[in-house]
Length: 340
Ligand code: NAD
Ligand code: WQD
Image 1 (cartoon, rainbow, N blue to C red):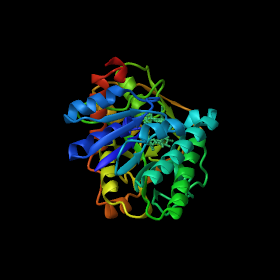
Image 2 (image 1 turned 45 degrees about the vertical axis):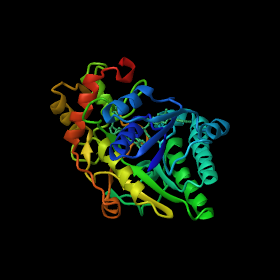
Image 3 (image 1 turned 60 degrees about the vertical axis):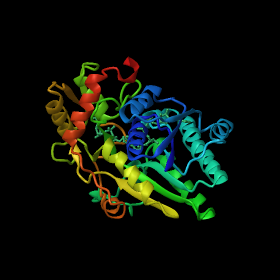
Image 4 (image 1 turned 90 degrees about the horizontal axis):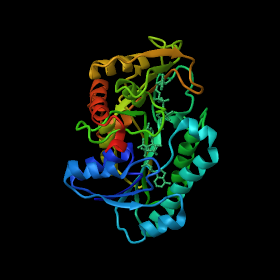
């Protein structure tokens, strides 16, 4: 298959590119490198011995997207491109809505013009908003958009609706919405991994930068949640398991729109992540407990049964594997791709 990855130079896209190339698929990446480095794709090429066709363009700019994709042929699209920082989306809502929604609308129009019918979309567990009290593990029947607390999350919920409406008007469209839980880890080679710009928003890249000495200590956002140790519990999914989930989704596409949770089904607390990372790295991870972060939930864990059964996919890597692989990446690349 010839697969277009929008945003394919980013953290998750680069791992998906690698897995597709290793399987023998052809990969085209469209990226504006606003939050990534071309070095990630050079490393993917080095690891696989294959070539990635790279097109630099802003997908949110219709004329640029048309020009970039006019002469390209592809069978399927995995749509990663977009802005993803929750706090930034609260400060810059127009930019988030404009970029994420326009990118998707442009892509859907271009796919229709070219009669490319296969689409896998990077959605997020954030579309579930604030689950009803007592819901322990989220399955895909949970309502979308209830209690979403930030514009980033709304863009994901809106894009799910846009894809659903477009499919109603274009019944041949085969779309899957992948609701990722908390992607972590790196390719075990340590050649590619998560390289956040500025101060990391997410837990594991922050912990990794403390372990490598770039930051002094972790701020743990609250220890009075109704969880075993009082800190927030999340479902951390190894990025290689996540990448394999995309391959499974691409191979199970059929006309219609189907949503799948990609998670492990297991929850770990912040302090359990700190402990696992300390063990994996052999480094001290100093931390202090601070006030809870606005909008955070106590617990967010996937019920991945639907993906397990219908996509014949499940996670095979543990939190310890993710910490080990993250540490290999971080220790080999203390300044990310900028140091390359
Ligand atoms: P990332 O920022 O590393 O990758 C996104 C890529 O899209 C980057 O390479 C960026 O340069 C590119 N991009 C952004 N705007 C663009 C535009 N207008 N035109 C072309 N390229 C553009 O993020 P990621 O962690 O790899 O996430 C990939 C997707 O998965 C995103 O849609 C994100 O919202 C979603 N997601 C991520 C997480 C997570 O925790 N990492 C969780 C759930 C969902
Ligand atoms: C995990 C846990 C924090 C940082 C976010 C987005 C979500 C999705 C994944 C894209 C929580 C705690 C964190 C820190 C901490 N992204 N924490 N100190 O918030 O579950 O999900 O990323 O779709 O939409 O909201 O992930 O890694 O930020 O936090 O104590 O410095 O770690 O409170 O309990 P989150 P996270």
